[in-house]
Amino acid sequence: MNRKFSTILVTGGAGFIGTNFIHYLFGKAGFDGRVVNLDALTYAGNPENLAAVQKVHGGKRYFFERGDICDRALVEGLFDKYEVDAVAHFAAESHVDRSILGPEAFVRTNVMGTYTLLDVARKAWKGRDDVLFHHVSTDEVFGSLGDEGYFREDTAYDPRSPYSASKASSDHLVRAYHHTYGLPITLTNCSNNYGPYQFPEKLIPLMILNMVEGKSLPVYGDGKNIRDWVFVEDHNSAVWLVMREGRAGESYNIGGENEWENIKLLDRLMEIVSLKAGASVEDYRKLVTYVKDRPGHDRRYAIDCSKLKKELGWKRESSFEAGLARTVDWYLGNKPWIDSIRSGDYLKWIEANYKQR
Ligand code: NAD
Ligand code: DAU
Image (cartoon, rainbow, N blue to C red; front, side):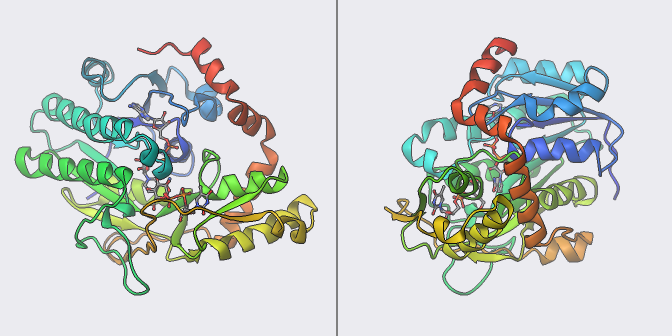
């Protein structure tokens, strides 16, 4: 199997992983077709992330469309206008803490938005089998592990936050569209990503920036929750591999095989940032503050990605040390991006420059 696509509709391409995916497509992946980036530009999306792509390929092979994946007429129009033959569906509300504070947006975008895309694709593609709907999902749909074991593709779903419940619903819809209507789909469930362009409310960028700004480093609960970290480019190389070579109807787990207790990860991060920023690690350690735990905080995630490795020959390129060093360098070297995100100025700039459809 080696699928070829002419026009990929990337949803959520102005967010963290979607931005990196589009850079990857035009860079290392050597994709020679067109990319349409559909993004509503919520607080988490910034089209400036793709300014370099826009400059080289804008209007020829790269098209940015501001809009909501729940807007059926808009999505139908894009399928028609661009003759979309693949969807890489990244758009979502993605932050667990926000889902605890306000679940509604998660149900709307993650469930209704995914349904809308699936239904438009089904009708536009009318039984074709040379097309693909790829759904990007999370390991959080599997729930929480104890000290032993790994999430496999056949692990029963057990989502425990509004975020993971909405992602689990979207996964079920994607599979249902395959089984019921024969829509060609693939699905990936990935562990925690880190790397450039991640919105600084997630653990790694938040901690890097708080260190350099001398702010407290909030550790939830006892700091012993475990996450399996993968560099964003390795996640995206897996997504692209599955899109081209994965079996239709199948899901594949993606992970870093790289488990860290939050507190140990923070310790390593403090060492790296202190070296690069020329600051004292002891000063950083004084900033660590244990805070009230996240309600329903999943204890441990760990991915078994042997299916992806054995069946499709996927390999990670980045070691954790190299990936973390690149990530720290990126956050230390991109002050204007950070300042604009932190001040919220980029949202005003988006409103002035990109009309919502
Ligand atoms: P993100 O929050 O950084 O980006 C999400 C993007 O989706 C933003 O650009 C936002 O503007 C856009 N968006 C939100 N609602 C929309 C709507 N209604 N219509 C159109 N666009 C909308 O998220 P991310 O971390 O890049 O995650 C991308 C995908 O990967 C998500 O589906 C997430 O569930 C999944 N995932 C993330 C991780 C991780 O560690 N970040 C791990 C596994 C899976
Ligand atoms: O596992 C994949 C998931 O990883 C994705 O599906 C989500 O979209 C993504 O946000 C991420 O979810 P987490 O909840 O694991 O990521 P977060 O960065 O919010 O938190 C990582 C761990 O760090 C988690 O155990 C909570 C803890 N934490 C987080 C923050 C923001 C803290 O201790 N302090 C903090 O300030």
